[in-house]
Length: 105
Image (cartoon, rainbow, N blue to C red; front, top):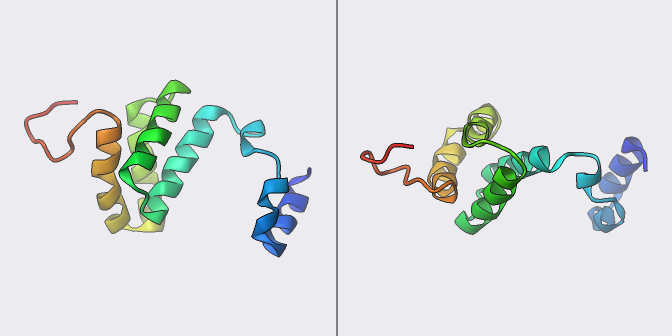
């Protein structure tokens, strides 16, 4: 399905999303996981959701640095408050405690 057709279907009725092929067909797994992390930041996702997507991103080859870059990259769009709220959740997902000053990455 062409991108314009997909956009039209999404614009007309979000329930048609199930008819749209999985975006993983078009995006590689690493990029898709990073995009989903950005979406979680934007909507204020829960800690377990960050864990799942961070695990998928790392298993697809993303580095911790790239994942943190996602936070920095979305800050101008979603605002500092969303990024500050997401940072500890993402840190825990990566095996760090962002609030522990004695811990080094």
